[in-house]
Image (tube, rainbow, N blue to C red):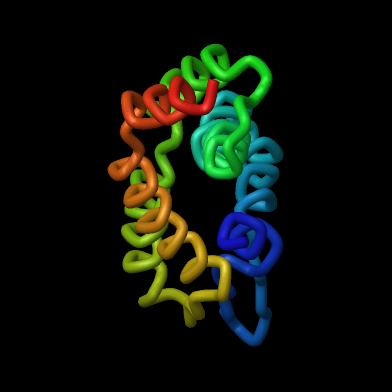
Length: 147
């Protein structure tokens, strides 16, 4: 739910000279693309949008059936992909970059954090906790007991 809120609601609002601009994560990626830096747009889109989505989807795909006492199809492959995607999910680096940029913009415009910023911050904490508590050996042991 935090991922959905972080990607649908405004991340930040800027007000400068009476003009208000709201930005979302996806619009930030599109703005980078339109400004002529497609390489950075793709990298930001992958590390802040696609990799976290894949990480969450894989966690749910593997852990929900295990919790329900079932073995998900392609369990081993899904676990390997989860480990491959994990280093690319750099939401915290993206958030630090946003906060640094915002501190520089505060003098030029009024910056209002949006609901998505708070959801994104909470998502970082929740996802870090979920991954820290994930013990692959315990999951495999639980699956062996079920068979």
